[in-house]
Length: 431
Image 1 (spheres, rainbow, N blue to C red):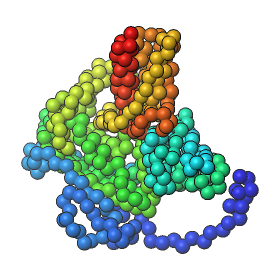
Image 2 (image 1 turned 180 degrees about the vertical axis):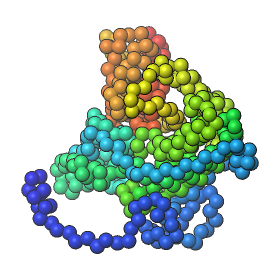
Image 3 (image 1 turned 90 degrees about the vertical axis):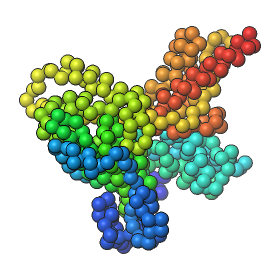
Image 4 (image 1 turned 30 degrees about the vertical axis):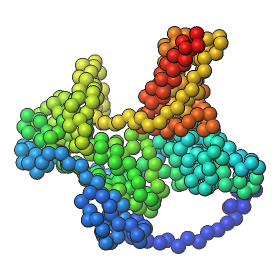
């Protein structure tokens, strides 16, 4: 390894700088350098067969009510535009993988991942191998935050091991992590919100321009879903653009897409509160969504607890604590959805009454095992200490989706409860 690093230092590369674009707004301009000669914008409001090449891969649009009528009814209108830069997840542990090819044509990969079953599928696709020939073993995760949802080193290590017929270990340096993995999108977000004198929002409009990097596909859909969802607004228009540019392909990062547009929206909300003379918290209470509120993307909301959260914040002692010099106090709100998807779990009950659970959900925080152990202990009526939780590799369980979108405990607990209840029912049949 030391010799290889020394050899790399001896290699000199002359680069020709080609026309490029790295800013999302600049990439959307008609005269911007094109990343692809065959990319035409698709989506809402676009003609079926567009003939103008563009860096805008997708345009999306969500509507509710009559946006023009809503703004006509407003006494105050605030517009805010914000620009955010691509931000890396900053996990402590860099990407690291070990691949071992065997003569039987199988590959075993040990890696830092948020979803080993998804990684197996991606490796199989890239190397044109059958899923049954690949086993992925998840290592304990040194941080991910969405940045380890996709493969980077894994297919490279696997292919090198296959070529060399020897185990191969690959570890990124911190510099390589920043250069070669996916950050969150750089964005340009515009929010326009109107309200009456008494603080009732009558209309809200947003334009979301999200970088996707060198390939199409950003967190734009989730941003468009969450933009105004925590508020009860009758007239809404959301327009979004997924834009390619000369940057690394983006990845998820903690509620992917939501914080960037929330910054623009919440800034406008605070400005409206000032114009109406309302406390920013009371303004949000007046307009907060609740169960049954119709969303701008279609379905009504279930119970989300937004108003209850605001009431709890309002009643908290910290609200009335004196501020020190150079201190301030503010409030902001956001919205996110917990995804479900596939989760697998298998439970074994030993003859001594202990329980062992094999689950496919990666424990990204260290708390998943404790939560699942408590669930099993309660279901079986045994001490917590008599439960063992193991994260199984891809050969131990059926398909399991990535641990992302705050789904780990939510989805893992459902599978665990069902597996435990099935075990109890089976034990009763045998008894």
